[in-house]
Amino acid sequence: MRPLPAAALTCLLALAAPVVAPAAPAAVPAQAGTQRDQRDQRDQRDRDRPTGFVQGTRKPQTSDGVVGPAPREVAPSLRGSARRTPVTTPVVPGVDVTTWDEATSRGPVHLSLLSVRWGTPGLSIDQVNSGPVAAVDTVSRMVARDGGVAGVNADFFDIGDTGAPLGVGRDRQRGLLHGRLDSWNSAFYVDRTGTPQIGPLPTVVRIKQRPQLRVDGFNSPSVLPGRIAAWTPAWGRTSGYRWTDGQRKRVRIVQVVKNKVKWTGTRLPRGTAFRGTLLVGRDAGAAQLRQFKRGMRLKLERRVPGQPQMAVTGNKFLLLDGTVTVVDDREMHPRTAVGIDRDTGTLLFLAVDGRSQASRGYTMVELAQKMMDLGAESALNLDGGGSTTMVARRAGSATLGVVNVPSDGAQRRVANGVSIQYRPR
Image (cartoon, rainbow, N blue to C red; front, side):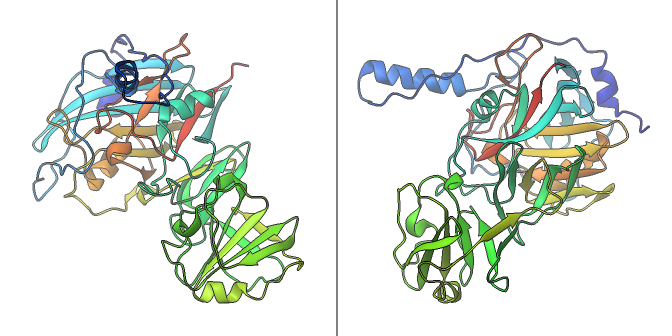
């Protein structure tokens, strides 16, 4: 068995500090302008603003877009750095949260680690979102709706436009929700046997009657130029020309209901509910869709190889089989990562605060090295910056608290997350 890192050994002796459990967020008022409405909006922001998992240890940080302090040319080793004594808080059997600070020559760093021993009876891991693929919400609300006891943010997403994730998402109950054929498929997933994995996970979408036609996206933010993509009602309401990045000419749409073409045209609907599957093509892709006429049989098949139970994606593998696979050692930002320690049967979800005087963030190389120090053989970088969020609850409490301090000063609404569920047996 791999020896525990020094931080983990110290954690075993630390006493858990009181958890700050924010109240459940209130609904955003429908009208604004009155003193009561303004007060309600301030209360809502206060509920979403994290105070730290350990009371009084952190302060709100700056918003996204603030560049971190200039790093040195060579990353210093983090081994042996001065540390505040780590504090470990049990959540449920098999799940712990540890928080600690590190002092390095580049500046201070605050870290939060969610450890999940996946073989613990009653534990499961799932993808969570706000319902429709093209929608965003806070991690705490998504995890709470899923009945989770802890979680982190997951995929990069189409921020400022559709809000949809960029990569692959598979839910235990709802199946495959979104994905791409050959990009954004660096994944963390649980395979059909219940074993966590990190590796490439493409989405295969095929038209049975025309297998030579390439369908590149499934419930993705947009269709690439010259390509074809598909959308289902899991997406939400139609997005019109946002699906074609604003392109209005040389586009085509085909609606398929019960394996037959119901409608085809060149105008993309927006803001409407729909049935069946919508195929949208741009340029050469639009020309290929002209062959489908109303009444023709057309069956769309979609799957993820291996049929994993759940899946989310990030942008880069940090570690593969113990080897560092990233090279950026200059850009310091808040980070979220997931790693697998097979020696101990533990999932390691790490949130690194950044963009503040209290915590500078990590480079990708530092993040990879830290995941290795914690025991991971393989690790994946998830969405970071203002999206970095970790939530958890203490044993005996049903209220989720924000563990880290997101750099926006409050939880960002994101596309999806990873939820840890516990059902005692």
